[in-house]
Length: 336
Image 1 (cartoon, rainbow, N blue to C red):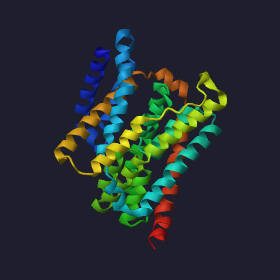
Image 2: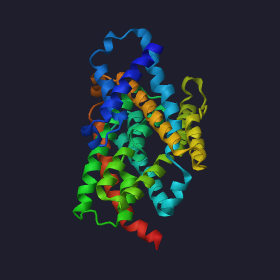
Image 3: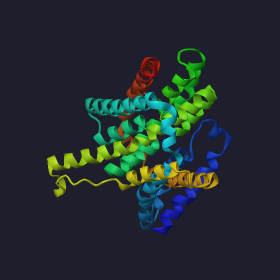
Image 4: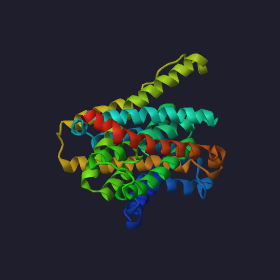
C-alpha cells in the first residue's frame, strides 16, 4: 500500500508546485483542482502499467486521507465568523443550500440521471464545490468516476462565476451594495478559492463579507451529510438492500469537523500553527483529489454523458437568479 500512497504524494507535490505558478494563481485554482487534473492525466496514460499491489494505496488516499482532510478543514472556520455577518446572511445561505440540492435532485430525476451523480453535483454546487463533493462521496460511497464528474462540473462553473461576477458588478448589472454583493457572492459561488478571487476583484468591502458568508456555507456541510446518511439508510430500509435494514452509518468525520471548528473558535493555537495545519490539510485534500483522478478514465466520463453538465448549468442559473433576488430584496427586508 505504501507504494500507492507515495505515488499520490509525489503527484500532490507536483500539484502544489504547479499551483504556485502565476498563471494558475491568477485563475484562483487550488492545488486540489490541479491534483485531480494530474490524476486524470495519469489515469488516461500510464495507469494500465501500474502494479496491482499499488492500487490499495491509491484507494486509501481517496477514502481515509480524504476524511482526515475534511476534519482538519475545520481549522479554517470559527463560530465567531458566523456572528460577524448576522442572521440575514445565515438565512440566505440556508435557503440557497436547501433549494439548490432540492432543485438538483428534481432536475436530475427529470433528466433521468444517475442519482448519485446528481446528488454529488447538487451538493457541490450548493455548499463548497470540490470539498463538498468529496464529503458527500464519502457518505454515500459513490464510485470514483462519479465523484470526478461532479467535481469537474462545479470547477467549470465556479471558475466562470469568479470572472463573471466582478464584471457584472463593476458594470452595474448587479445593482447591489458592497454588503449585499458580498452576501450574494459568498452564498452562490462554488469554491472557497473562487470566492476569494471574485471578492478581491470587487474590493475589500465585498471580499470580507463574501468570504465569511462562504465559510458559513461550508459549516452547513455537516447537517447536509447527516441528512444524506439518514436518507441512504431510509432507502436501504425500504428496499431491504443487502440485509442492512436501514442501518445508519454516522459520518463521524463530519462530527469531528464540527468539533475542530469549536476548538478553533477558542483561539488556543498560535496563528502560525493554524496556518501550518491549513497548508497540511490542503496537501491531504490534494492527495485525495489526485487519487480520485487516478481512478477516472475518459471512458467513464463518456458513460456519464452530457447530463451532469446540463444539471450544473441549470443550478448555476438558479444560483445567479435566486441568489441575486435574495440579496437584493430579502436581505434589506430582514435588516429593516
